[in-house]
Amino acid sequence: MKTRKRPYGDCNMVGRNIERLRLEQGIKQKDFISKLQVYGLDINPTSYSKLEGQVRLATDKEVFYCAKILGVKTQELFDEE
Image (cartoon, rainbow, N blue to C red):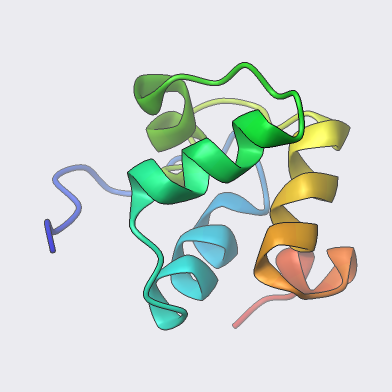
């Protein structure tokens, strides 16, 4: 597993939790992106990496489907650790 090269940004509130939950569940980033694409989200690896790194804004659809894939309530993505 690669380690994060850059510190987290402040463009969204959910990226850090999405990354944490994805890693806890053992889902590779490329597999997670594929699952998002099944739901119709056209997202590339760079854009997704920026979402997790909190370097770009997250859309409501992205937040909704990330929570759905991770099997958590949307609010859990906003919770502080």
